[in-house]
Length: 309
Image 1 (cartoon, helix red, strand yellow):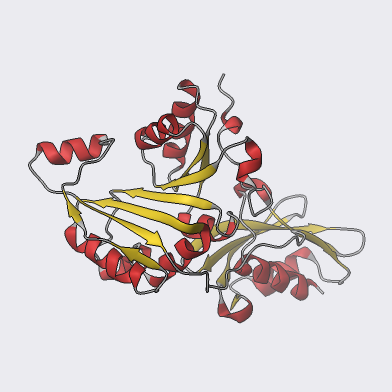
Image 2 (image 1 turned 180 degrees about the vertical axis):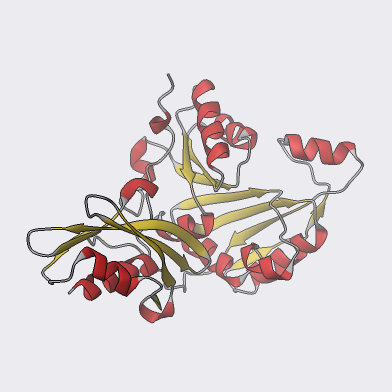
């Protein structure tokens, strides 16, 4: 059996991740949305002295990427399962990454999905935070307007410089998707943006706060669940939103609250456990879903604790 934990980084690891301590690598490269993992494998083989970190929102792709790295005997690959918009911001040290790659991402053409594009200003701030001085973001796409929007948006931050967008450029490794696209006679575009400015973004970093607390109030589990169901609010400074959806109670009197949080577009679904105790009620974040400690998550937990007294 393959030990996937050798490759997949546990979500509960305390940030920022000291990735260089994993082994004596000279630097870190990141690929966002690595899909089937072939480009990730190419990077790892071409740069044996570099730690290659793949970020993938699809759990199936994350597993495939991990198995691919293990079967190829690559000890310089690590996989992170989750949304890169959050992971780049909160799971890496400041100026810790040399190169970030993104190959043929979905352009999200519909207006209601525009916040998911790399063309939004927040993405430039994330790159500015995580890249070392002189570090690069390298984008390959099959949509010309997407390349132009990325160039305009990221350079507008003043922290990046870029040459011309290249059409049908030479690439040292051509992915399966790209080979198929070119076989149809269609064009591709690429650009490389280099960090030339200083960090000026104030980023939230998780601190060490507990995800379980015991209250001394006299409320019952049933009354507390009825009180907080449907409650909603924002995190400190308005940097996130949370809402309590459904509530449930088991035959042994333990309650569950479905919580949905959103932090600058990064959404999580998880449960709070509400457990009767000798002093009152214990409220804890259910660890099954491995939720990240974001500002909205903290605000939701604090609301439940305050309601419980």
